[in-house]
Amino acid sequence: MSIARVTALAAVAALVVAPSASAAAYPDPARVTGDIRVHDPAVVKRPDGSYLLAHTGDNLALKTSRDRVTFRNAGTVFPGGAPWTTAYTGGGRNLWAPDLSHLNGRYHLYYSASTFGSNRSAIFLATSPTGDSGSWTHRGLVIESRSSDDFNAIDPNLVVDDQGRWWLSFGSFWSGIKMIQLDPATGLRLGSGITAIAGRGGGAIEAPFIVKRGQYFYQYVSFDFCCRGASSTYRVMVGRSSSVTGPYLDRNGVPLNSGGGTEVLAGHGSVHGPGHQAVLADTGGDLLIYHYYADNGTSLLGINRLTYDSAGWPRVL
Image 1 (cartoon, one colour):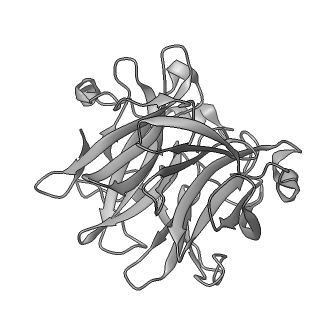
Image 2 (cartoon, helix red, strand yellow):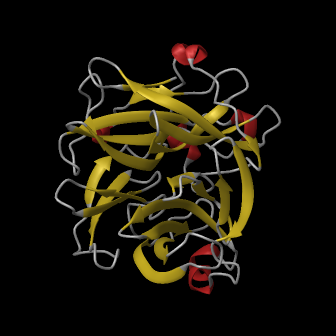
């Protein structure tokens, strides 16, 4: 995610790898204007061709755009509050890392409730017929984690496989990224199974996003540290698998479960700590959507085109 965790920084620091020298060659984000201060953005294209964006904020913040260039504030998901989350937020209203989908005629939003540095966390589901502020219905708890668990239930992402099965990836630090199966009828957890799909031995990894392109499922994750303004070291990594549940390998064949990952985007110039990425299929191809920090520490919306090389690995344009 984003705005939480990091309890054993001394141990983790030894596992953090500096961004590659190639970062200087990365393109800047595309031009966006208006209300573009975001953290952990998720975007869906609506049936009318406009865009709905949700991001971390009090009661979960919403923005809209007609053209994917100019964005405006559009209220919050829960203008009346979300009291079912406060056991995990210490009474706070700040909710994290929403994941947006438009499926079967309605919007699905998975989101996180936690506090900084804690894995006493939960992921919840809300749905809406329109996506508009105040139209969302609380559907229940999907999964929670406790201090005794070796995972952290934040940063959810929904993926539907070719057989129509629903899967939720999630995770931050601790033992890494996990996956559970969901019931498509309810959007809630199906069974008790949990699969490990990426990890760095307790190091800085979070914010999974899985998308199917061609014969592969691509798992994007964020390495290193966010939430430090212009000192943030977040960067976007990827691996892929022919199966939604893995194993995911990077370009060099290293499993993501063993710390592997191929870098897609890192800090460069006045773009600091790009991460908590999502991929949106749009007119003209895929988009990588993320937040980054400006020189003054403000967290901003970043959008770049994605292309795929001859071996099928993504890169930003």
